[in-house]
Image (cartoon, rainbow, N blue to C red; front, top):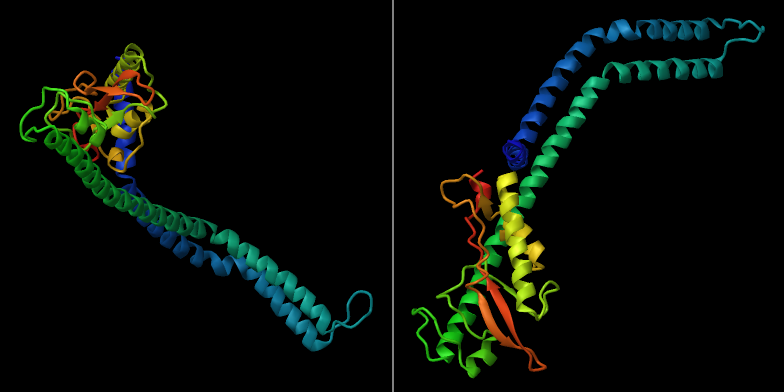
Length: 294
């Protein structure tokens, strides 16, 4: 029951995040309408609000014109009139500011909402463009490297590989063998150079299994997992495509399970010091661009 509630809350938050630009635009428009209404109401009260100050300004002008004498016996001259006029005018400005404060507030809110919506959409366009470019590039490089290794080993790239590559292919590509026909654009190498990899196959298997189990539990509790979350946990570079792709729980297009391809991606390798180790090409069963499925 708790996992169901947690998943519902997480999905609701994700829905809000996804539709944030639309929500912000609606809020901005509503704020503009509210500002117009408040301005109209404030304007009808303006004359009544500043009437006392208008009378004071008229009295100041009349006193100056008639050359009246102040209480201390000195004549009421231009400098006195100027100071009093500034004081009264300041009070008028303060009253107007208070009267139109709701209008100003709603206009400011409208500007912030529309500006934020535009900023979010701009970031998403950049992310989508980057995701498309990087995905094509990464897939092309990985696919080319894989097929070159097959050709160097005298194998047909269109045929499944079940044998270890020869020495020449190993040196040319860095891949010592594979049991897969091809890798997807989401494949990532887990090998020497990764802070989470070590020379112990048992420890690597345990670590990868823990990551896989963690994100399967997270998928069930949250209802979704983005690929970049998995990349980050593995110690692999995050990608623009990883912001949009991943897994959804309870979706007809997925199987409600995250498989990193641990067993299928194992590669025999040799370190510079001659140590024989096992490296991995992890090719997760990414469901696809889940951002558009939400």
